[in-house]
Amino acid sequence: EVSLKGYFIQCASLSDYQKIEEKINTLKKQGYKSIFIESAIVNKKKVYRILIGIFQTKQSAEKELALLKKKGHSGFIKRINWYGINR
Image 1 (tube, rainbow, N blue to C red):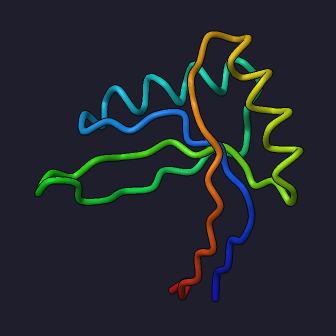
Image 2: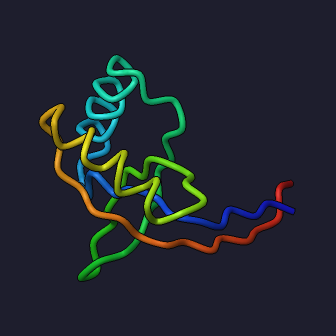
């Protein structure tokens, strides 16, 4: 079983997976290690979202979001409660 619960910073939502990989590489070069990709269907089109986290409190996510914005990125905080089975 896999469970992720807490706050994340969503800093991208794109349909081009190559651009997602490029953005992740940039984030890794800037020191971000805990990066997740979430996929979703929006208007019948698959999109990929980059999430940074996990933060236990909204305040810690807000602090990191401020630093992320200083590095030239945009984003917002979202609360997630994922549950799945790891096979």
